[in-house]
Length: 330
Image 1 (cartoon, rainbow, N blue to C red):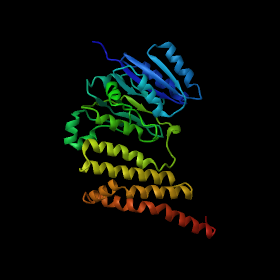
Image 2: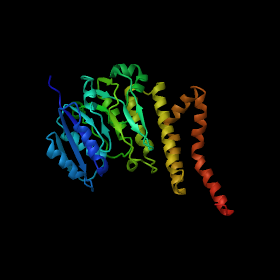
Image 3: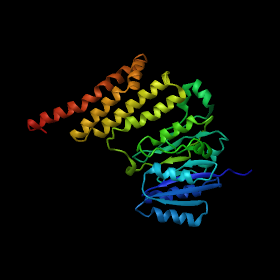
Image 4: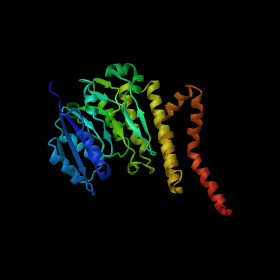
């Protein structure tokens, strides 16, 4: 039986310490009918040379060299040049086990195929993000919104896409956002699908990389992340508990991120954080989700208190710090 061609897309930017590990894991795939598109996104280290080296030794590898434009731009360049029936993504600082592609392909003809992955923490320990096998149509998902909890949408790795759907619907990554672009891409793609499959596999290894860890405050995060939530709402509806829980969970996650990234920063960053959190509180979807949450279980009352107190915590901290400095204790 002839295997359908799969395009493996690898965006590459200054990943020299990890790139060979990634490419060797692709070489070791048990599924052989691959084209591997390496996009050198303006790397300033030896990544370009390493990519060419693999392309010279294995005809399945192709290299695209371009000016630096970010990971979304690199992935889009590869999508436009892909020739496989299916597309999968691998990040250059990660690796995959030998059956990564095969297990995604064994799902059959479903439009959207997702699997679990193994994630490495900062201390080097590994945790499994497991998935339970399921098959569902988009119509079934619309009638049973709670099924969305079983469908991974957070990252594009450990997923399989049909190139025909991407081309027909002109689906590409948004280059104007720098966080949450994977989730938005998945939500937009899901809207165009008829069938969805989740497979029980843990073949993707998401390595911890300190250089890619995000620690800067960006108050655009809420606007970017809400685009994904609202797009998901177009699929499952916006008048049910599942959607309100998504809105609520996103609001809390964003506030946690703002507080964490600005908590030890300057007074200016704290002011930015307060403005960002107040923007979250004022969002009409968040306000409606708060009212919905109040009708939920008792434990959400504590979350509500936390949510309303968030904007004032850094202010109180700053006031205390200034008082201490005035009295020579800072």
